[in-house]
Amino acid sequence: MDTSKEYIKMCDCPEIQSQTHFYEHGLRGNFFNGNVWLPRQDQIQEMIGDFDKVLPMLPQLERLDKACGEQFTSMEQLWLAFYMSKKHKKTWKGAITWRKNMDG
Image (cartoon, rainbow, N blue to C red; front, side):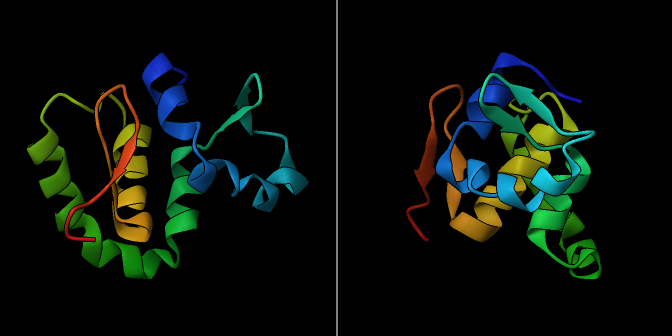
C-alpha cells in the first residue's frame, strides 16, 4: 500500500475524496492519512468500473507507464493516473496537481 507523500498529494483531490462514501461501510482495510483517503489498487480498479471492461485497457495502462517513465513509483499511483485520465480527463503534473487534458 502506497503511503508516500506523492500518493497522498495525488489522492487529495475532489475526484478521489468524493468516492470515500462508497467504501465507508467497510472501513476495515481503508487507509487514511489525516483526512485524506488513500484508495488501494483494487479500490481504484473498482472505481474504473467492471473489471472485464478494464482488461482491454491494460495496453493503454502500459503505454501510460512507459510515457511517464519514472514519474509513478507504485501501482497505486499508476492506476490512479489511469483512472483520472479515463474518468476525469486529467493528468498528474508531478508533485503539483491534476490538470485537465488539453484534448479532453
